[in-house]
Every structure is written in C-alpha cells, then in structure tokens.
Length: 464
Image (cartoon, rainbow, N blue to C red):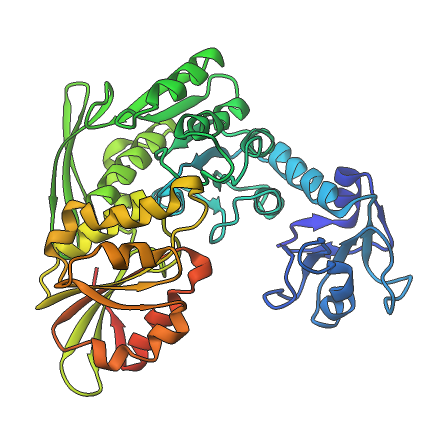
C-alpha cells in the first residue's frame, strides 16, 4: 500500500522530488530499512547522507536529503529539502492532517512505553491502529511515527518523551492528540530540572497540543497532580482522573499473583474488574489510565477491558521467563533491563519480593540523570520495603557502589563496574529455583546479564 507519492511528499515538505516515486514506509536506519521505504538522512551520531547510497542499494523507494550525496546519481529517487529534520517534521504534520484517526498521546516519568503498548493492544481490537515503535518518543521519533501513519488509520497512539525542559510542547503540537495521558511524575532527569515540580510542568505540556474538546487523563495519586490539573484547566481541556484517590476512575483493590494482577475499580456508580497479564501493582495503575483514555477515545469500557487481556510486556520491560538450566533445574527471570529510575526500581523490587523463588536475586545497575542527589538515591534503595524479602543484591556501576556499601552483609552480593564483568560470574551466582531480576538504565547494558542467564539454559516465555 502506498504511503507517500513523490508529489504528496514534496507538497508536504516544500521540497523537490527528482522523479515520480512512491514509498510504502519511512526509515531512518539502513539496518532495519525495508524495500520501498523512504530513507530519511537525519544527522545524529553520523550524517545519514553517508548512507543514502546504501539505502538505495537495499531497495529504498526514495531518500529524504538536503543535498545529493557523493556517489548518488542526480536522477536517483530523492526528495531534496532545506533541512532533513524539518522535512521529517513537515511530513509528520501532513500525515496527521490528512487522517481522521482518533489520536492519544502518552507521556510520564515511568510506564509510558508499557502504557502505550496497552493502549495499542486495546485499540487494535476496535479498528486499524497505528502506534509508536519501541520508545520512538523524541524530536525525531514523534515526527517519524506520524510520517509512518497510514491515511486510513482509525486510531493512533503516540508516545512523547523528554530529557530537558521545552521538549514536549512542540512534539504534542505535531501529534495533536484528542486525548493526553500522563502516567506519573517522578524523580527522573533531575540533571536537567531543578525539582520534580519542574518535571510535572514539563509533562503537563502534553495537554498544550490537545485538539479542541480534548481530554486530559491525570494520575490523581501523584504529589504534583495539581500542576497537571491546573495546566489542563487553563487550556479548557476536560479532566479525567484515575488512581486510588481519583474522582473518576477509582482503583479500589489490587491482588497480585506471580504472573498477573487482578484489579477492581469504579467509575461513577459502575464497579468493574480488570486483569493485567504481568505482575506488579504499577501495571494495574497504568492499565487503569489506559482504560480511561480508551473510553475517552470512544471505546466501550467492557470492550476495552476485554482488549487489555491481550497485552503482555515487551522485551526488557517486565517480561517474565522460565529458563531451564543446562546443569539441571530451572530459574525464573524478570527481565526489566531496558531502563531504571528510583520509582521503577522500587516497583521492580516489589515484583521480585512477591515471587515464589527459593531465593530472590537482584542484579541492579546505575540509574542515570538523577542530579545532585544521585549517590544518596542509589544508597537509599537499601531502605525500600521490598528489600526485606530480597536474598541477594549484585550491583553494577559506579553509582550502584553506594547501594552495595549500604546493604547489610547478608544481602550484599558482588559489585562490578560493568555488566560484562558481572556476566562472567553468573554461573557461580545462580542456583536452580532462583528468581532473578535484572534492572538498570539502558546505558548500563543489563541486557548482557539477561543474555548471560539465557545462555545458561534454554529460555521459554511463560504462558500468559
């Protein structure tokens, strides 16, 4: 199916098409490019213009460039614009303008990717749904997601992230959501913000792009929920709250099992139950926000609850697996290795503490971008309630050395600077019957621990 013709893309960007081409996708990476994609030559770690020839050789339908790169023919299928980033943004805005899809935007300090996947899973049961891939939520990820949106999409889920002040507002104005959801506000990116209140103001900026009559979905339980409400009110958005202290979707009970969560909630006079196919009370809260957002998107609540049952965590974000060890026996792996901050770290430790393993083992890596209190925040993880039920903690990275030193000797495992060093010792640290958590910021590559554990046996995802 054709996504863009040369004429459409040229009109959207104000660029010049060198020939009459068509494309059926958009890519910024030659490693994942599919035949027929429009290759966008962004400048990041390297200049994408250096890869245009390779992209065309791999079957790209055209390339979005600001000049004809060396080694590329003048009559190659190109769209030449003044600036590639601006061209991508214009393409995304044109895609948003030509669709009648209902759009939901998602942000939050913790849980936005999992919640985005929940929303997509639910909405896919209702109609053709387009959603952000992985964590494509930044200055290029949002316009890329929009540029990829088919014209006949009925729903779209756009994840919007930030690292610094002022990032969310321009992205949400590109996405123009009908519904904006903030999962939570927590101590993340404190190197760029003076306080958590500052983070709340930035997250609230997602409401600035709401379509007229749009809805702001607010987590009523967070400390700075008032900032979110005030921003939404100032923009004349409808406010829908969720949480244990919510005026609208009120979470009344959560029962956790080893592989799932059963929750009870009420909206108005209606009581309802819902299930989440992953352990952890935080998933119940994210799911409640997703259900509220879907209702505002026009989905019947019962149908949304039914669609939610189809969701399960993605790799590195709470996936639970059983691994059969080559030496005999089994272990249970909690792969939460994609990212970390104090809030999500505590939630992951809660899941580990609730598990039924013979021993509960944690491999914890540095949490990044926490600002001046970063050392104290790492050491403070020794005091979270879940630590009482964790048998041994192995620490990775210079910041996690503070936690290692704060742990009692009975829980203190090994400390290494890198995941690669720790991975070499896995066979001596793991026994049959263990439940093992891997958690840390992405740059700490806790995926090496996960891969090392899988190599100790044959992994298989648990049912559900």
